[in-house]
Length: 427
Image (cartoon, rainbow, N blue to C red):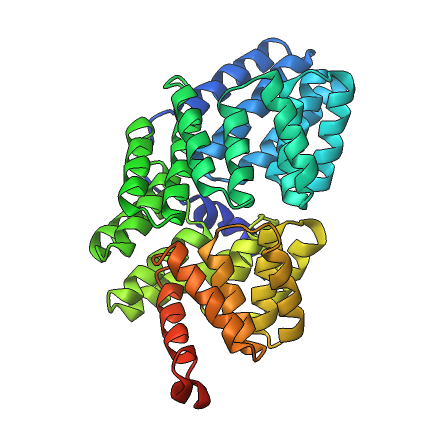
């Protein structure tokens, strides 16, 4: 069996993490899948059941973090469109599936086609806004999000407004909108409400407000127990607070649900900070292996892996290749940031400076963006600019990353000490 074949065969175990595990209770998405499958079985010549099934699979992908459900959703839509190529239900869900598979240009085209059929359907503006954000066309994203809010104020509109506010530097406004979104949520759709609360936790964390972030993640877990996103968020808070054993336990629970590269790496970082280098290396090796699997099966972890490789000084040429592949199909400031970081780690500093400048063009209040800009500026021989970026990173959130925040503090101390700077001690 070839290496790609072995990787594909292991994909379920590595990317989903359920092989050989205990039976799990049926979730709302599981029940939706079962109902939709029954509808398909009873009416195979109608597209409606297949659209319902595709929607249920997309809900399951959100619940579980398993990207394998995107292919199943697409297969259901293919059945629907084979029965009726103009079925509106299939057209509107198609854009959602393409977004999940990171075909952002295809998603935008599909959403525009659906909007042409039903110009007053809020759903189409939601998917247009999502696609435009991923492509970096923020002005059009704002227009689509506003049209969506005009047509249907509520949780989906508020969460997109929050994300856009955060992008444009208004974190407090993002917290306000996500608070409204959570209030508009329903226990009848627990994953969506929990996801919204997780985003609220992320915004509090970005502001360095650990108690508020922990409270939001805790609320998410109360709504949707063992939600991997909330477990990971709370693990990051506990690590920032210095409660490393609790952080490790939370991350372990998260990776049991979905061993994604960011969660595995975070667990490794906690082990490293706890003085457990062998345990840390085992987690990092799993991330490396996950990267091999992702490459073989086309899982959209490119940006996550590029950042991980750069942060841990592993596979740096591969990191740059992944970042460049992302930039070829995906725009926006976070793609520019990942590209700039990979360019810097591969000693292509002049290009890194330009990418970092693009990443900061919206004035986004993000400590990680500022930290990357500071390291890149230092590498370009601009110590004063580097110090400004590093100070801003630590002022925005002194806990922004378990590993990188310490590097930022050490680098800033060196930049502020002319003698250490003369000796090249910037790390």
